[in-house]
Image (cartoon, rainbow, N blue to C red; front, side, top):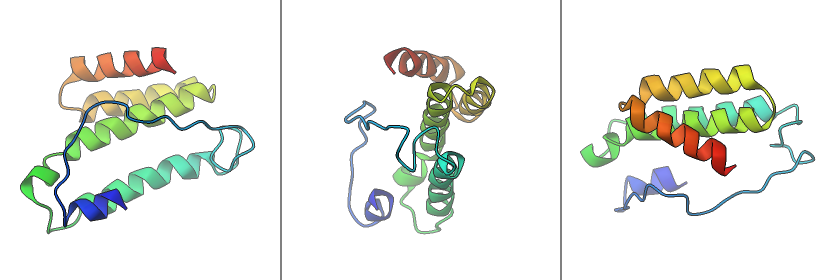
Length: 116
């Protein structure tokens, strides 16, 4: 919803954690759920659809690299928390490749991994 709204209204990006979501294994998006991988994949589909739009303002389109970097860092942390180190490392590697600033991306991964 926020992505669609950003096409019509001005938003300001704040590169900080503003809220935390607490999950538990009994939820449909919990690490032990059968739909966990689908939940993570859906987030990517939302970004793919949004950034494929032709009517994005240049400042919104410029956020694509950061949006995908943040997505892959999030996915990596979710897989790491679920105990799936291989998938976590693959997601972190994607974050580094797509993030545009490998050092900053690695620092972000390190910080979020320690914070969770």
